[in-house]
Image (tube, rainbow, N blue to C red):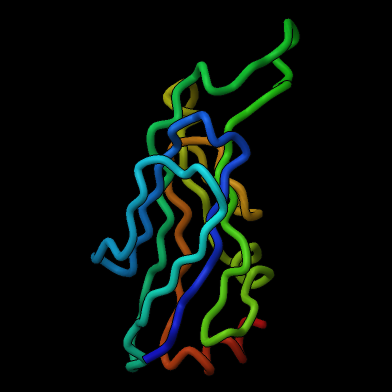
Length: 142
């Protein structure tokens, strides 16, 4: 088994942003309203297989983002996903290099795919594909 862990936090505890964490087709964590930073962990089979780790932001509404008259964001509710680790090895950098963030600007724009830098500000999904045994994947990607 390989231990996956991360910290999840919010920029605004009053806004009921929710999150799901999936490993392959299994939801391993769900929280309907992130109010403070907290730690999660989950054990994953360290078999010879392909996997996908997904973070899903839910419940974001257009009114959770304030913009000025030019359309510049002046205040926003976001979730932070930091200290991503496999077996206590920091994988933030490899996650930021490899993960993709798919969203549609909370229904106000076209479907888009962006790089992920540890923050989610739109309903959507961050996906990180990895393989096990995890140490081989880490050697190839760190």
